[in-house]
Length: 66
Image 1 (cartoon, rainbow, N blue to C red):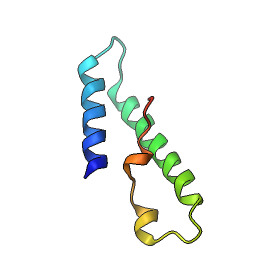
Image 2 (cartoon, one colour; image 1 turned 180 degrees about the horizontal axis):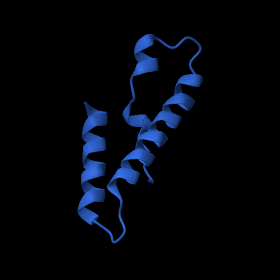
Image 3 (spheres, rainbow, N blue to C red; image 1 turned 120 degrees about the vertical axis):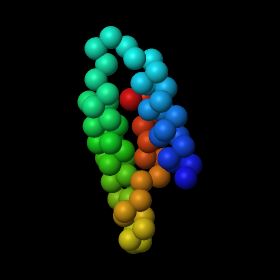
Image 4 (cartoon, rainbow, N blue to C red; image 1 turned 180 degrees about the vertical axis):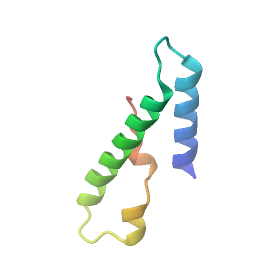
């Protein structure tokens, strides 16, 4: 739930900024790809990750600087 709140706030903030040339589809794709990469790095450090850990993105996977 916390990750969803953070993600919703981040996307809302970026969209409200509505900079010239902003492409929300590209932003969302880049955001998702960064989250998947961060998730992979995080899970790779776990010796025996659970099915839930492998399937679930967390607030730690959300990039702060995209």
